[in-house]
Length: 356
Image 1 (cartoon, rainbow, N blue to C red):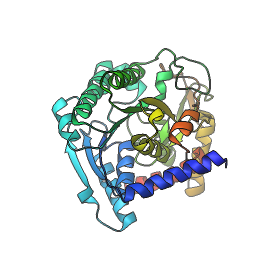
Image 2 (cartoon, rainbow, N blue to C red; image 1 turned 45 degrees about the vertical axis):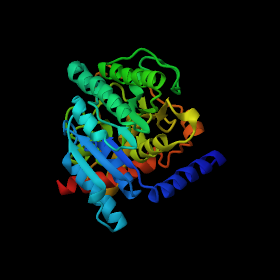
Image 3 (cartoon, one colour; image 1 turned 135 degrees about the horizontal axis):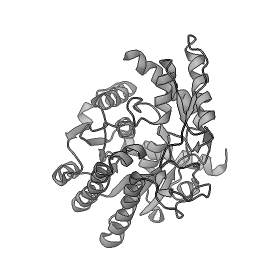
Image 4 (tube, rainbow, N blue to C red; image 1 turned 135 degrees about the vertical axis):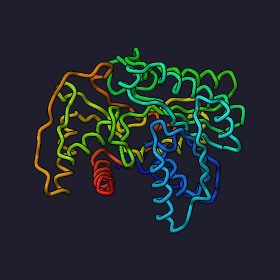
């Protein structure tokens, strides 16, 4: 491990120790979702006060309950008093204002994700992702929030072919979803220059892990394939399987959110960062990485090959992110590579599906 990696990991460990004895108030929008509930769990473990906002459009109460339960069991104490939930919608400005009262840091995760969903219903995607985002910016600014960290997306790189993806070079968006995330970045930049409001955008690259929903037409590839393999159903790959992605375990995304919210490096603020590994995995390789792990854990599973179908409209062919900027300015160092991230995920999915 490089000297930079060691110092970055030490930075994150030191930050966690600091937070445990310095309680702040955090708002997590989309708290019932996949990344939102993982943020909730980590913040509770770090002795932070958390306000959660969600309308359950795509999230689940069970994610909140499990996050609180896991954090409480780890620390051996009831952490319910450190969490306040507000059922509300970011498209309602009053809900946003109510949620922002007394908040130090906002981690804005609420959105309608999925490229296919946005192609099917661009109006709803725009309403949640653009109108809702602007509402949260206004409410956070007016309440004097110290830092606004928001979920952007690797989709903003669009048709730009260069690898690895670097934050200052993007192409033409390929879907309504990508357009909404690019608009988020533009709005955040304008709020920084016009109002002096401090924001940081995080371009997530194929984040995966526990509490990621395997159900529905818009489920992400890893939980969807995992559930289908466990249930011995057919797995379909769009295209020839040589499409590549930079898969990033959720704990790395949690680290980036916490680093971004608390950084004291003035050069790091009002910036956009990739959240990824600077790695590339083909869908073919991913399938066999998942299948082999499941067969090692579930002896009854037979080895099966995936089925192939047409490429999906709006999908980028190859994706790999530079993380140099995040390492340099935020001292980010991913704790999990794809292999150990998949190990953690498979164990969780097997246990989760057993309960269901």
